[in-house]
Image (tube, rainbow, N blue to C red; front, side, top):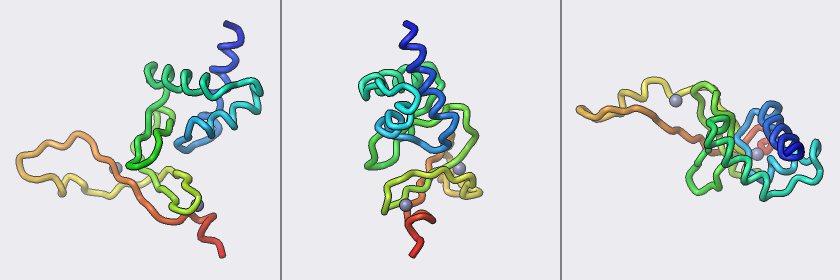
Amino acid sequence: MQRDTKQRDAIRQVFHTHDAPLLPGEVLRLAQRAVPSLSLATVYRTLSAFARENLLRVVALPAEPPRYEKADKHHHHHFVCRQCQRVYEVHACAGDVQRMVPDGFQMDAHEITLYGVCADCALP
Ligand SMILES: [Zn+2]
Ligand SMILES: [Zn+2]
């Protein structure tokens, strides 16, 4: 029980300090700094539990394994670097996406994913 709480806290802490959608393997690596004995199975189990408790949200990008981010973030999109595969948050929106909706349709959400090369990878 005590050990469980420590693991949960370590995983939760990762999302407070890393403001990007994370893969379970990345969460494992970062949380192991606090709890070296942490296993990938525990990370998967805890991430699913956090998602059920609405602490985390699953970020499902096309052709990418699911990542997790904090559920209480405001509206944002993602940039996928084709070189390093990292996913960044983009705090901007396309503007009037409502214009794209055909007459008679009612939109309640939208997903926009940007692809390219991140600033780190673009350096010569
Ligand atoms: Zn990159
Ligand atoms: Zn948007």
